Length: 593
Picture 1 (cartoon, helix red, strand yellow):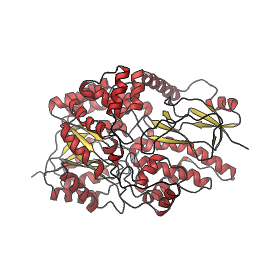
Picture 2 (tube, one colour):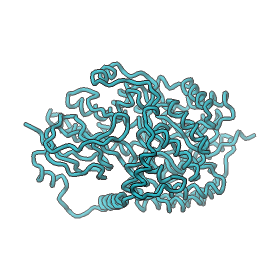
Picture 3 (spheres, helix red, strand yellow):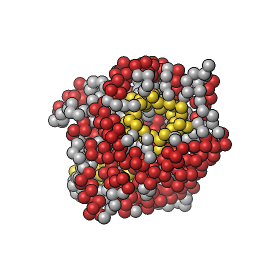
């Protein structure tokens, strides 16, 4: 007698998100949807979610049209569609006011998305429960999420208690979101059994990345203990830092005795070919080759595979700065492998100090950034925790929610010295509603609110990306970025480098360079909200380690950029709000004798 039926979901959005930082275009999504349907094995498809909309806007594409077009064929054949929702942060990297969050569910339901996977990076139910209510009011199925990690505080009992609370609040499904793939299989099996024993009618969906290599064992454990739906991927974007491939997962579960749907291999190969075609077209220009590989090193630091690309980009500039310091001291330069091990070790050290936040967006970025800056400031002899921005402090102080563990005494003491105050306030109550402000902006610009207010929602959710999309600047920038990436791949003639130009033009100054591509911001508010800030003036002085400006990447991450080695500002080459490329020079700061 066969065991229970296991359903599969294709996480087509997250396949791209975990490989690179762009998504297929609307026309590409429309082309591949029939092949996904013809495969016959998917009961669900992920069609939208975190970072999808920002990157589509930055590609000059309207994500509302893309979501509608991608959902439509699945809606017509009864395949459930689902999206990823960051709770307090909704679809972006920083907090979203209540009125915008509530509107999101009405818009997404109208666009054809059935299920919203609501998560909080801290597993703080105060950030999840309001979204459960709004999702139900909007006509969507609320799937509450447990962000899985491995630490002394993240026990079966800890997670089961959260599941009880969100189910009591109306969650109809539970997702075990193993975003770094470091959840231990035995614990995941025990947790699944605990939830199913108490709530037998609740659907449990497991989402596990392949990065450190535990995902197949975890899938087997959760299925043998009552899980209902398993997230999978397809080649050429399966495995690596992404998700296990449907062929392998289906084979394993079928041979274990579970009932699984048939898989049409001709349709699989068609979907595989189309996905490769999209990569070859231009999306492959933004896929980090390292994300195609698994790494056991991820087990120690717990960082999610999906952020490895941006992390490696961050590591390069810091490596150069550290090696400059080591050269002064007559010490050997560190290789990238040396840097990687040092960074992973520092994340392991920092993580418990900041209260064991599950390492998922945005808290994985915050924890990584603390560790990265610590490597630099320790090399400079200044110790740890010298360079932490408002967003990082917001996590530590409780403005994003309650961390699972305890903040280390040295950080509590440092906060007191800085005059910063901890809070236990419900995070969403710290934000003022904003839709009226965005309605006014749309009215002044003569912009249409869109079908079901979807354009109003898009501006309110992603203002920094929506404005350049509307002006046409985003499309121009993307085409320039694609050309630059293709030129770099193909090689080119010998040209004077930007570094050489800078050396001639600013002989005595240090260039402040963009570690990543993104949009320049002079200020970032203490409540996690983008804030207007006066542009620095020529002659303004900085200490080494001061934050010079911020960068919002295409996928919404806020990155602080240090003021080089400190000194006097002698020139600025970009304007606030301007989109800049990785490696572009932002300004020049001259060290004072």
